[in-house]
Length: 87
Image (cartoon, rainbow, N blue to C red; front, top):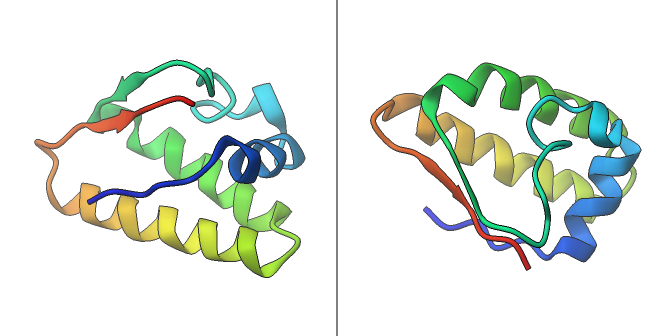
């Protein structure tokens, strides 16, 4: 599954939700690549909960819904890893 999100769409939402205080999303460098393992799922779930609270428009709410769908699929297939490709 591919979720293509521009830094310009994600970064303001991450910052509104707490920025570098977010356990996973706040630590990712938007200009670098990374890999998250299934062990990161609980912290990423918590981060997405904070994104949902901070989402202030339809674009941000749709992004949160897409992230939730991605996490649900990942939860069902614990052998998968989540790749983050920066800008």
